[in-house]
Amino acid sequence: EEVDEFLADRAAWSSRLQPDVHRLVGEMHDLGMRLRRRRLDQGAIELTLPEIKIELDSQGKMTGAHLLQQTESHQLIEEFMLVANQAVAEQLADDQRLFLRRIHPPPTPRKLHKLTRFVRSLGIECDSLESRFEIKRVIASVQQQPAQHPVNMAVLRSMQKAVYGPQDEGHYALHSRHYTHFTSPIRRYPDLVVHRLLDALAGGQTPDQTFPQLAELGGHCSDREQRAEAAERQHTKVKLLEFLSHRIGSTLPGVITGVEKVGLFVQGLELPAEGLIPIATLADDHYRFDADSYSLVGNREGNAFRMGDRVEVSVVHVDVDRRELDFRLAEGDGQQASPRRPRPKSGGRPRAGGKPSRGAQSRRKGKKRTR
Image (cartoon, rainbow, N blue to C red; front, side, top):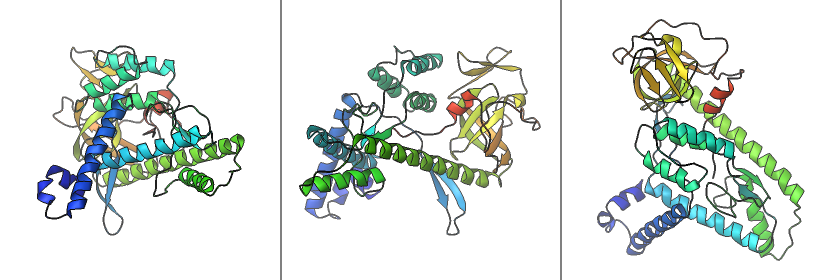
C-alpha cells in the first residue's frame, strides 16, 4: 500500500524516505514497467480474473468480502519474480541440466475454435483465436466492459492446466521456452527442489536426478497444488454462503457469468458470491436456451439474458451443506419474483457429493492458475 502511495505522488515521499531508498523504488518501478511492456509485446497472455478476499472479525467470523485489485505495486513483484524464474530456468537449460519445470501446454485447436465461436456470439468481431495475438487483442478490447468477465473466463477455460515436470514443453501463457518456480521466499515444494539443485551445483556436486524421478515428483506436486486450490475455493464458497444464509431477502447487484438450460449463474458485484437463477422463476416469459449465442431467449421480442448482462438479484435460498445459492431477479428489474420451485433432479447445478452436467462442470471449476 505504501508503494502505491509512493507511485501516486513521489514528491510527497521525498521527505519520508532516505534519498537512496527513494531513488531505488523509483528505478524499480521504471524497470518493472519496462519488463512488463516487453513481455506483453512479445506475446505473453494476461487475464484479469477476480480474486476474492474474505474479511473476518477477531472471532474468525466473516464480516464481508471484496475483490482484490492488482495495482502497480503487485505488478512490480510479479515482473521481478517472472524474470528471476525465467533466468534460472534458462541457465539450467543452457547447462543441459534436468530440473523441475513449470509447464503450460498450448490449448487444443478444438478448444480455440470453440472459444472463437463464443467470443463472436457476444458480438465481438475477431479472427481465429488460434493466434495468441488475436486472443490478446480481444482481451484488451473488453477491458472495463460488461463482457470482460465472461471473455476472460472463457479464455481461461480454453487453456490447459499448468503443471510441474522435467519435460521441455515451454509455457504457453507466458510465451516462454524455459520456465520454473524458483522465487524466494520459498512457499512451494517445487521451489525447494530447484533451490536444492542450485545449491548442489554451486558446491560442485553432480545432482543424482533422473527423468522418471522428476516426472513422478512433478505429478505429485501438480496433484497437491490442484487439491489445495480446490480446498481454497471451497473454503471461500462456504464462508460466502454462511454469510448470505443470514441475509435471505437482501438484494445485490450482479453480473451474469454463465447461461445454461437450468438458468442463469450470477456473481455479485459488491459481494462476489455466485448463485443460480432457475429458468422456471423467470416468470414474465417462456425462455429457451440458445446454445449458439449462450443466452436465454424469451418469446417476446427483446427478452433475452446474455453473459455479461448486469442484473439486480435477491437472495432467496442458501444451503451451505449442498453448496447451493439461489437468486431471483429483484422486484423492478424487469421480472417479478416468484415462489421457489423444486430444483430439477438433473441439470447443471454443481453440489457437494454430486456431479453437474458437463456444461455446468466446465463453467464452475473456478480459476486455474497458468503461472
